[in-house]
Length: 123
Image 1 (cartoon, one colour):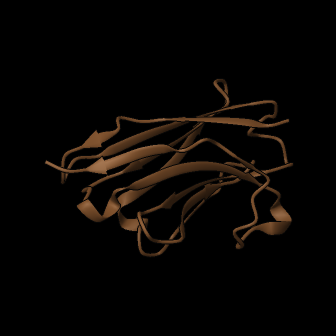
Image 2: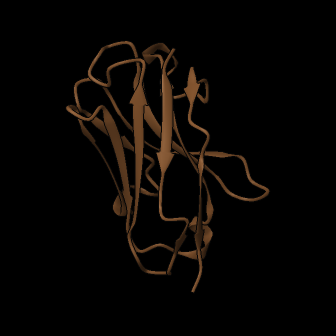
């Protein structure tokens, strides 16, 4: 059973950079079983996929967020990271880390989710 635990700062000022952490247990982030995704949900809106890193370390980004976003990993810590720069109030959302079987890539079908971490962008 894969478990994901996100953490983040909670409140961020506009224009600052957000750093989120997702600690993975019960499975290796370098195994071919899953891709590792960051997804967010803003109030009153649907899920928005942000970025993905696969077991080889290849990265993929939402075109609308690519210029401000970076996904990375630490294999030794079995941890996935997300950085998002130039934060705006519209980036306020619950941010989730999720594991996805490669066959479901490009869909919103995920096998395991973290509990999510609230990020509020406000001065």
